[in-house]
Length: 149
Image (cartoon, rainbow, N blue to C red; front, side, top):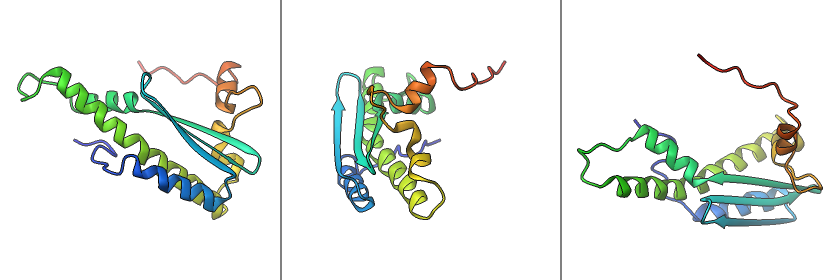
């Protein structure tokens, strides 16, 4: 079985697409930052006076891929090589995932399905440098999800 984006190939070329989408939507600035140690990709842009801060984890994607494609001793590769393959897929996939998510949110705003704030609320930066979602979670303003048994 496959998971979405496991066969993505655009990788870093998706950055130009994200930048174009944000610019067309009226972004005042746009930037990305890769944290190689943590395996994260940060996309940040400012629109309508709001700074939007979106972070994606290539290691998180790799872990999901490994759940779908667990290592077995029948494979021609070692476990380390299999895990490296998963991380490589994650490093490519996060760019396409972020591009498509931003494009979807911007489109929803443009067609009147959502307000800008509604589409990006969780990722809007507050003056203290935390996102709205970080603030909500730290204050425990949402009900905890029920644990399945």
